[in-house]
Image 1 (cartoon, rainbow, N blue to C red):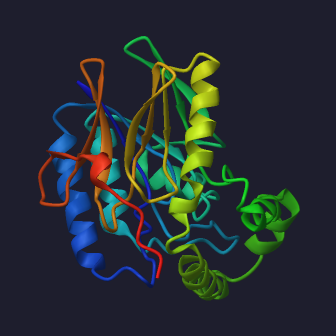
Image 2: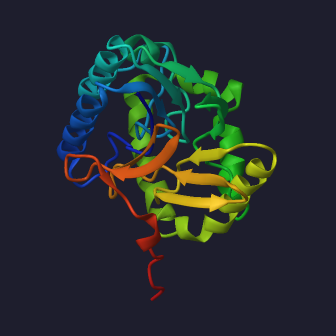
Length: 257
């Protein structure tokens, strides 16, 4: 049996170049892990936007939610940790997928390993503007007010915000590498054996302080995930429609022009 960790699909994002390919690979991935998946952790930004309004929320991704439901019915436990784009998933998402929704980062134990799992947004100290925005977006009063909007208006606003945030974030992820590694290092010194996060869209596997820092990457460019099997963490890719090892050491930050 195996434990899987994935993040950062951003289904529905207006800037995804080939959304059909993305959904097709996701479906094949779920089918590929059905035979041995004991637990699937989705650690944020499965959707580019998910919010459950008072007047309901149209399920724009039936292929995605039905695949997760199938996996759940096969006996695989699914834990969903919201990211900065889909933190508001709730009862509707649960009923469609069978997943458990965690409000914030969690601690898990597998193979007697103490594992820290979270999306990773808000870690970078230099990203102060988002850290402020995060507090606003997760404020209960603001969530209540936004939920009163008709879903059609909310979706239009989300598309505008998504395009703007994607443009602003391009290339900046590399600037935050040190913050993320220091964050993982602190947790490992506190007794965690492994730290798994996403958000940066850049897959990583790095030994730190006797523990392991893993970033799940994304399903836009790298199609990466983490597999925990027989007490070993593997960083892999599904870009070619099958599970293959992924060497994160080969990745280099883009040259500055």
